[in-house]
Amino acid sequence: MSSRNERDTILSRAAAGQRLGRDELLELFSAPLFDLGWAANVVRRRHTTPGTATYIIDRNINYTNVCVYRCSFCAFYRTPSAPDAYVLSFEDIARKVAETVASGGTGILLQGGVHPDLRLDFYEGLLRFLKTTFPSVHLHAFSAPEILFVAKAEKRPIREVLQRLMEAGLDSIPGGGAEILEDDTRRRIRSQAKASTAEWLEVHREAHRLGLRTTATMMFGVGEPFEARVDHLLAVRGLQEETGGFTAFIPWTFQDQHTGLEGEVTKAGGYDYLRTLAISRLALDNVDHVQGSWVTQGPKLGQVSLFFGADDLGSIMLEENVVAAAGAHHRMLQGDMERLIRDAGLTPRQRRTLYEPL
Image 1 (cartoon, rainbow, N blue to C red):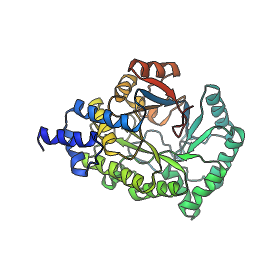
Image 2 (cartoon, rainbow, N blue to C red):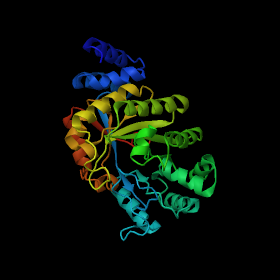
Image 3 (cartoon, rainbow, N blue to C red):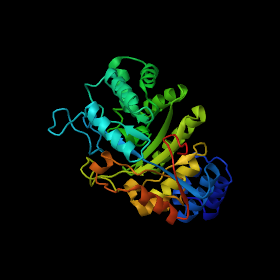
């Protein structure tokens, strides 16, 4: 472990805009928390408008809970024969979108499970239906594992699948399925089968090459070493250096209730969350936006995240099912979100999916 002076030097370099390497980022996991917050806040202010924090009104619509993969960290998936397995009809999805629009929403996040029987024509048909019915709603849809499964099932290149989805109305891709982009960890938590690190990155690389913006995420606290978190951050930074296609990075902590890992790993608490959030902001010097996770941490710690590198608090989330299935049930109204931001001494700004001001 390096000395306090050496860690201070690393933080000063990051605050000054210098790129940190793998060993330096690892050292920061032993840095004092408030020193990390100071440096991350300096970097955050350089990337985004000081004195403001953004949020969006949208809805997470899970069109199916059926999934061929049985990731040990997931409490949401069901087998095709499960009594509570479902696939929403287009009409049911449209009703949810209409409710979102009526509440001031500007977009939806649409993703499933990876259903073994759904093919490209289903996804194209759903996108066309929604874009025709709600032309102004941004369709942020289908994570890398969903797209990868369709490409393999259809025996088509990832690029072709993405092109067809874009022609049908896809506007951007969420960062789901990343978990930890380090394959030893992915094998242990059984997410390797749905997408390896290289495959997840390749879906986003192809999307960026086609001009499709995406987000990057990290779910941590599944018993991975700090080295795995740093490798994840460097993988995102490397692809962003190549393509520039990520709009934001969203880290959150694993929620363990009703999962195969419940009681098997030590969950990441608030201290670890803020520390990892701040290090993410310092590592990702080429990603403009970092989102705080009030959904997993609760509103108060979400508010504190605005001083540890986050410039955005995500969605008021009219609906969320995946994290809720694992025990996180925090909810917030628009007035609550704006009050939370104002109480932090910042000005709230509603945004659209690609961070355009509303």
